[in-house]
Length: 468
Image (cartoon, rainbow, N blue to C red):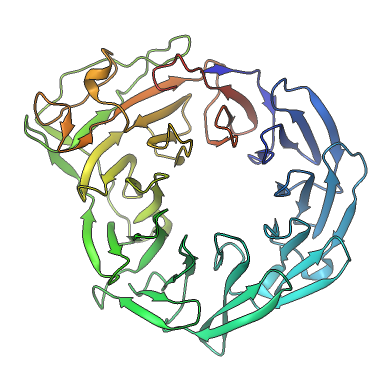
């Protein structure tokens, strides 16, 4: 991978346009738009105050920015210098803003204190209000075609799901749900079901049809911590439910009962016939021009997967399954458990078991799968270190004679059943003290924005690299 020069940015606000032709970044109250190929500046826009959020319109023709402290929203054309729209939320303030993905010409803004969601139509100036959403940072979900928006609300200590038609923003359905304190919801990719889950005090997952019919309730136990998140597989065949109990419950789409329950172990015994492959990052990385080569120590028969002691006084954000990432075809699911924050657990859905563990030196900050047709089994991870980490399920260990591939696998064959063991690699970012805290790929998957605390650069994929 090749890298560009480093540029300033604020609050990790760096975004590619939908077509990948431009990249925008924020520096204080300035919004800088660059050509994504040459990184030449296209325009510099000035907001009324420090910028809190930016987003390209779905068609890439417009760019909005929001200043939450002032409750101000501004919209520019990509090559313009003056805003084409200005929105002032007034005393109600603004805590979140996004484009309407259906029309691409309306903006949704969440007011402070959960008062309402306002839909601002930029074409005719009309305004529609969605009253009393339960949350601003969650509690809503778009259907895959972006035609319908489901929103949680709460009235008289009772939770409801409201479904709005984005064509005219009329409420087409509202139904009560059997929760004590609903935390979030998610629409299935096929649009046939909604999954709703309760708060951290109740482990309850409910499956509803969009018409409001309760299809199934999954509550494996009465007492204990609840659900942290739930994510549908891309095929809608499974729901992965991550709990504060440090387990992942895999529900099927026929009965919505659990077909697997994965507990994240603190130690793992490795033998020549072990069915789990482990990749470990040594305590230090040996820098190289483009790749961080790691040494290859001999593995002991028991791999210690360090689990920090749980402190009851700490926030619930520090326990449980916090990240669930499905590969593009639903073949793999990658998990992060906050009790073992340096480990990535990769499960095979075909085999319904743990396939790989990646043990890194620092806690995981972000991870995601590539969705390129030929690279959909590639997982990218960053930890706030000067490296970007890859795991690729399309390869096996013997494909590469590399000293930095440290793993134990079951026998002389590199495949477990019909599943490749995959390979892992760390790529160094040779830009001085540049620690990768976040990343975003362009739509064509040829470029990636890498973000440090207050800087960013672009990485350009090189096909001759081991993993592309």
